[in-house]
Amino acid sequence: MSDSEVLEVRFHFNGDFVIDGSKVKYCNGDWGLSHIDKDKLSIPELEGHLLDHTTFQRCIRMYWLPFGAEVSSGMKLLVDDKSCLDMVNELGAARAVDIYTEPIEIDANEEIETQYEDEDVFALFRDDNIMDLDAPTHLVTRAMKETVQEDIGVDVSITMIKRAKTKVTKKIMDSQSGEYSKLFDYALELKRSNPRTSVHIALDPEEEDHVFQRIYICFDACRRGFLDGCWRVLGLDGCFLKGPMKGELLSAVGRDANNQIYPIAWAVVEYENKDS
Image 1 (cartoon, rainbow, N blue to C red):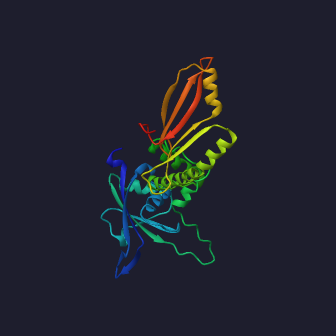
Image 2 (tube, helix red, strand yellow):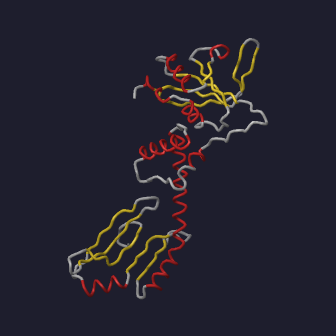
Image 3 (cartoon, rainbow, N blue to C red):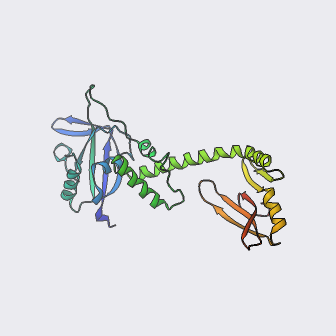
């Protein structure tokens, strides 16, 4: 995409319009810079990029100011997506614009809209809408952006989508890491329900806390089946594990009387080496 199709937007926020004689000034505010595709300019898109710089209640007005114009006389109100399109048309080949924000005072009897933050986006994905974390990042963010548009009707920025993805990833990792504390109970249950089954769990000796390193499982039925009815051929293979918890899955297989693959034992290890 060429530079002429991208608009440099300087947001001015958290300030106040102050009348100084015959002039109007924007005082005590902050500013942030965003780059937005001109063909995507809309009120929700501007609000999404503004949220990359600050948190606000969704009761604000936005004014745009052409480059070089005076705040006192040159500001124009952005009220809807059509006014955003008009702004792009008036700017023409210009590549930069200043947008000033002003909070709208709400009557005490009126309902105040809910503050719109990353949590609103995060809520869409934290339960049933967990995305494929192994997919390419640009595909994940694009799919999440489309879901937000469909479910809450807001065209949020990619930056907010990435922050929500980070929260979802952390939630998944926290939930899965908690399962490791149940491994010893799992091993005991396997041995109770499958006598003479071999289950070995190793902890990382370099860690002070109890940190999982590897697990080996061989069911007694699989072992006896291999000895009694399989060719005396043993195959070893492994594959990498995807997802939040990395590692390798190693397996030992044989060939049964029908020349089919017969599982014997398997292990989950940190990586394939002499020790594992």
